Length: 237
Picture (cartoon, rainbow, N blue to C red):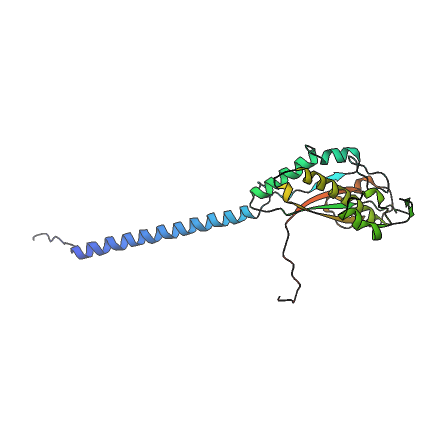
């Protein structure tokens, strides 16, 4: 009996080949889409970081009293602190390096926040600048906005003392800024705040009542921030 040879119509062959190419094309498009999603996700995660490492947190520059000790009850800068903030000082270099690192991570620094921390020892009733007791209510703006020295300020509380020391650091940073002709540091704004004796070192939360002399709690922190947009809840304007 003669062997029958089955032939496939040309149209059927073309249809099979077309279906195969369509399948491969769709698979390629799906793989490309998945790859783009992975790249976009990684890019977003990288943008969210401040620094180069995946788990790196923003740097907080800490100036402990063990290294930079203010005179008791005073905001006059210790000589070594003034030197280290000045041109070519290690504190200024650390600030500039952190700004560059943040800017390279597609973030922006607008403000340097300086926060003064004290221990819980009571300030007491000091006599300074020929005045008994605190005088920040009448003298603070003069020191902040005019060419008045922090030495005219007298604290009435630890909150006053922390603010005075933060402001002293800010004024020294502003002096350095005025000497610079250009650069990222030249464009920054500064803020001075006081945490008084409220916060423990290393972000360990609120401090319990403790009226002892504790140098480990006395410190200045320098933080980097970006100006936000002011908004009042419930106000649509």
